[in-house]
Length: 189
Image 1 (cartoon, helix red, strand yellow):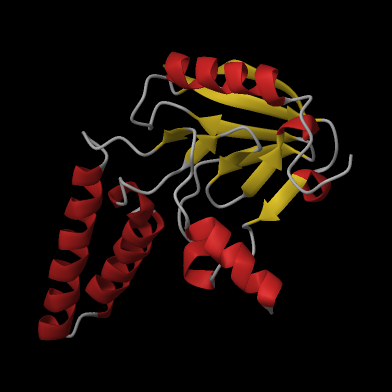
Image 2: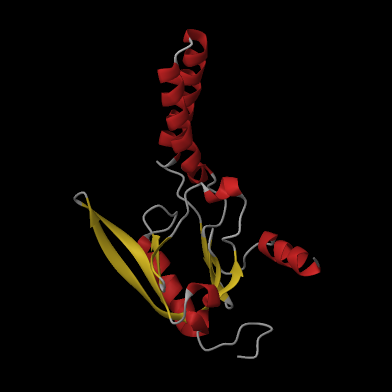
């Protein structure tokens, strides 16, 4: 019980080091439009007693709920300090468990996107020093700033953050190279 309280307090304190949040420019508007459309269709479905409008409003509401984290622009999504790499929704990965960090360019529907490709030297459950995947159900259903491409590979899209992709990857590489040989605080290995 005390350990769970200590982990919760550790997660709530500000992260010292390099931090990245979602960009504030153009990501919020579509989510607000979806929320407004959902409310309007829900009201119209109740006043007209239409099952079709209610179903459409539920689908639009689910999509707006999934994209709700894009509105939380002040919340840290990616961070790096001397101990570990933090990815929101995943947890903290110790530097010594990261085998490689590289920039991957993904072409989707004719557009080119930059992503951080993080290769682990061990499996994900072993590499996580603070596992944040056991979050409440409503948070598990929302958008996460990463996706897993294999047992040992994490991809983080960089275009949606408040810093340029090159700045983010350079800072991550610099921090990883400097700290990968250091032991994690409180560990012996």
